[in-house]
Image (cartoon, rainbow, N blue to C red; front, top):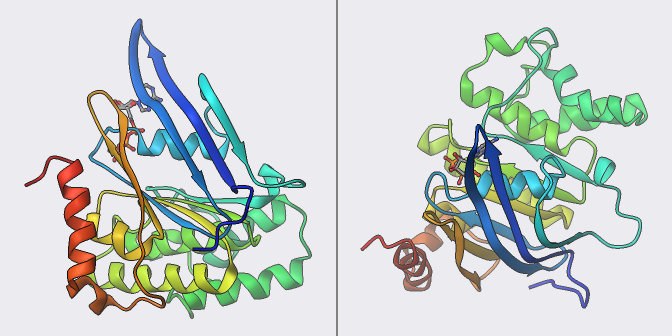
Length: 255
Ligand SMILES: Nc1ncnc2c1ncn2[C@@H]1O[C@H](COP(=O)(O)OP(=O)(O)OP(=O)(O)O)[C@@H](O)[C@H]1O
């Protein structure tokens, strides 16, 4: 692990209750954990357990209404240093693929030439070389999701928040993207938080796994994944991997 003395992320008793139409929904209760610099955290759990809500709190899109949250070190700028990719790709349909990827760099006023080069490199990295001038409607759902992943990285953020970014991909592309996101993570030193329903994906990708359960939403477990690096897909067949995956299934009450 690459944790420094002061954690990059620190949550203590973070909670969030939605109040709509006279109804209250406890989406997150008592989320407490530390995450070191350059760690890769997977938030895993069933639908409705509050994973997306927790990610949106980290992204600064939703306020939390209880507990304490600290992100980044001195000089960390949430507007500049966070990259987010959501379940839905949310591309602008009137902009070509390259211009969609460029969007955060434009908003932040980063030098155009360097940003365009980086956008092209990222599109190649996610397997979309040659699609730069297409419009989103010309791409499959999985390709659109990969554009949104490239867009989340274009401004070189320190913290990357990924909400089920591989959900719409076929199984083979999903495995390839798991390897790619690990490669990007390993070579960049970024801190990554990945929301997923996939137990195997969580254990394969992450250095830390947090298990959330629904009804009521709460954190059921949080552990380090001490598997050797770099990881290849075959690691999923080892007893060590199997034991960690079983631990998650147990916490989720899946026999
Ligand atoms: N904007 C909102 N207003 C009211 N309730 C909400 C809102 N967003 C989420 N919820 C509720 O909060 C709970 C947690 O939702 P959340 O989307 O965080 O779960 P999730 O674990 O990400 O689910 P999924 O895996 O299906 O995306 C659910 O009961 C959901 O209905």
